[in-house]
Amino acid sequence: MNSLTRTFLVCFVFRLAVSQSKTVDELLALIIDGDQKSAAYQLPTDAKQYAANDTTINDYGEEYDFVIIGAGVTGCAIANRLSEIGKWKVLLIEAGNFSDNGLVRIPTMFALNLFSDYNWGFKTVPQNTSCLCTTDQTCQVPRGKGVGGTSLINALQYVRANPQNFNLWAKILQDSSWSYTNVLKYFKKSENFTWTNPKAPVDLKYHGTAGLLNVQHKVPDHPLNDIFIEANKQLNYAITDYNSPNQIGGTIMQLDTKSGTRDDLGTAYITPFLSRSNLRVLTQSYVTKIEIDKTTKTAKSVIFTNEGNTYRVRAKMEVILSAGAISSPQILMLSGVGPKEHLKDMEIDLIEDLQVGSHLKDHALGNPFFFSSNLTIPVESLKQQITEYLKGSGPLTSSGIQAQGIGFYNVNCKTCTVPNVAIFLDAGNEVIAREKQNQNFNDECFESFSKNPIPNGVRFFFLLLNSKSSGTIRLKSNNPFDYPLIDPRLLSDTCDRDISTMYLGIKHIFKIAETLSFKNINLTFAGQPLPACKDFKFKSKQYWYCYLRHVVQTAYHPMCTCPMGINKYTGSVVDSNLKVFGVKKLRVADASVFPTPIAGYPSINCLLIGEKISDVIKKEYS
Image (tube, rainbow, N blue to C red; front, side, top):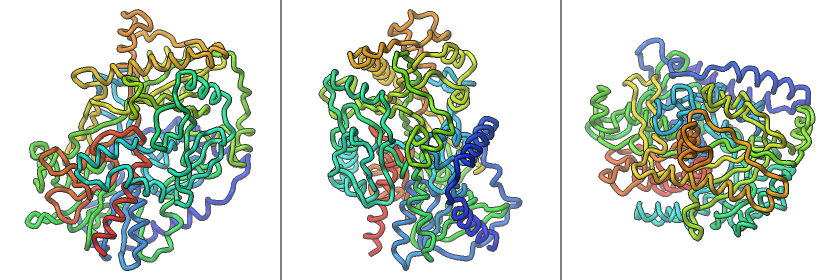
């Protein structure tokens, strides 16, 4: 076990060593080097780097009360909270590493980190209703790999689900503990909110100020934000704190940052607590299976690889699967829990017949929509931006969306309180080469987006929040090192409700752009006709439907693949306490358990799940 201990100690010492502050020149060199490495990086197509040298299974030696699989957002929260109980031994198993304080820490560099060892590099299978502008009609599905999970590589936007989402969950689950009134305390418990932008509306009674995760606005404010806010007023929308009960309207983004640097869940919930003697974090360890007793249907142990060897670690109380909406269903199915016929096809012995991976949901991303203007924004050199960043402000502290304007709307119902689209405002002249890589654009589409530089560019993009379309996660084989087959099937619902709503989302973008507020900067649509849609009149309904089929991609928000429900016969996988139906001592806790899609972003709502289920477990074993 010396190699495993060494992995832990090296990671811990490494974090301490790199936490020292850097100079402007050091950060400049880091960014230039990171940009070059990211541009050349090839995403993996499988996990065979973790394969063991032989089939021998070694006894890990130590037994733990709780074995948590995956140090993502939820897993980090659960490991922290359960290890508060000194008598409980907690093991957190993670395939990636601890992050350093380099590019991961700089918010606007998240696009570079998408092409790094911090991303699993998943892709969809070829699509025929969306993603048509991409190479091979496949879309990227970035998932974070490392202590902190996807909070290491996401766009940092702190967006809770709408209160009515939680009230619907409570109704579906027949469990009032999931109502908005009852989950709000967990949002507040986890949050350390700092009001850094007095222009941004904030309702402080819905925010926490003593939690572990830092939340703030980018500073200084961008000039476009004032224009965007005024445009919303002219359309009779409220200017609101979207993390209060009143989500509909325009506002400025709230970000998971601390003094302008990324605050991921590993940094917030794990690193400061590594001195706890009952908490063990095991990195570079890839879980291949949960061992479940076939007679008693009880989770007993976890099989994982590390440095070419395979180990078995036993869990006395519970195994908690928190590997994310892609990998959690994969691990369940490899362990014999999943759709009976699929497991039979994969030659996996069935433990429990459940609809694992059968209800994949994701937000659909519509992008890009370019406009020109007469608003001139001075362009700072990278050195100037780094100097500001070291003071906690400036462009590098943004989520990659410089203007930070955001609005939540229901484009089908002006009086509804649950939005179905989120619209973003950004300052940007063109699609850059890195975006071709990030979004896997094919040459024809990329040239259409990027061939004409746009003066004083303004850019909109938007998300569909309440997708009616569903996809699947399925095993490629029974080899645990093969990536699963991800089939989101965006815009595939039979009644075309999703594409209709997205079309209305485009019309809403133009309503915003045509307000007096934006006319004052001579905002003019500058998008070019997409060659693939040349058979339709430019900007007609038929053209936009065609355009959406081509440009819509996943928003990197997979969810609902192991959904909560009242029993297995509703297609659910876990109950309202996240226990797997038909299997003892096994829970799933991450975005996969969402019973419905949410009008928010998965990350912070996964943190809510971690906080809530930790309390449930503590109460259950008290």
